[in-house]
Length: 373
Image (cartoon, rainbow, N blue to C red; front, side, top):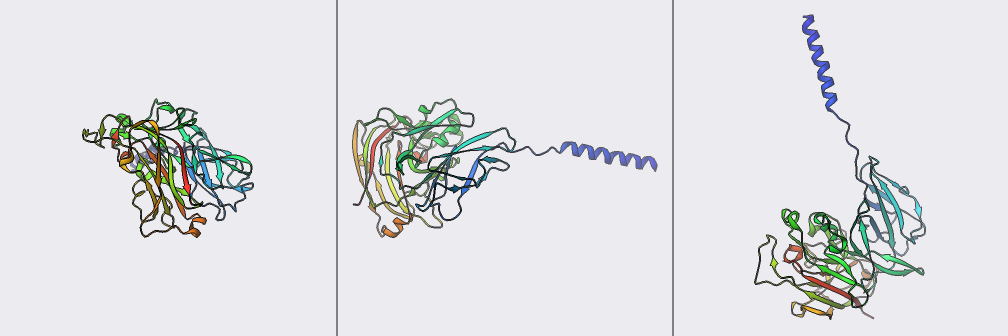
């Protein structure tokens, strides 16, 4: 009996040590990201725009950006310096360093505040090269420059699918992405958009090509490209009446669909359009699933198919912005930032459906959004 008890006790003790030896401490988080940020009061007029290592806040004119405190939500366990809640002067962009829970990774964010109204002339002269956490150059990011309190400040209003393309862009330089800055502008630099293959990785993901695109809004980086594309930012100027500018275009040789089936009877074409829509508690942005069909749309400009031509010369376009049937633009809502506006350029009009022709290339320069006087 004693022998049985001793054997049983031995089994229990060995089982305990076996089980405890198999239970390892949970690995510390390696992520060092800002997931969201908040400001006390009703100073934010749209959710923060968080892309790669940059955060842009669009603020009400009543915000005192010389003394502003941001509260951050970080990936679990991460820390930030300066600390959340630190009062800083945002008349110039501020840098924050996020450190992962395991202490092995750091990411530096540049946070800027935009209190001036969105501009209406776009020459695509200003761009930067995004980098990853190791300092490796990734892709071009476009921005505008405005004068606020006698200082030049960046307005980070543009976004592109470059953020998503980096998933399949191993070995590519920034100049080899679909959306890039080109020195061959009508005046200075310009925007260059090129439809590209996403390779074997893109085929597996059922995303065989990526159109070059640029739009006012943000890109969340999700694999669901349609949902990740958030069109529009608050627009509170005068009523917009037209979009004009210059373009050059050359279609790629072979049109393919999402299954990479070739369609000899189809020829690729580009897209240029502008949308204005009303925001509410349920609709803060439009995405790739509804940007041209949402009931919140109030006005739109679309380049007609008949006006799109292949050309090696800079060619002028003028697109009237028409208020949709049954809709109006309320001056009070306009002044109160209740409308969002987006301008969209794409090298393949069916690019959102991963259809088009690899090699289709669209150049854009000297764009202007005209307003009522």
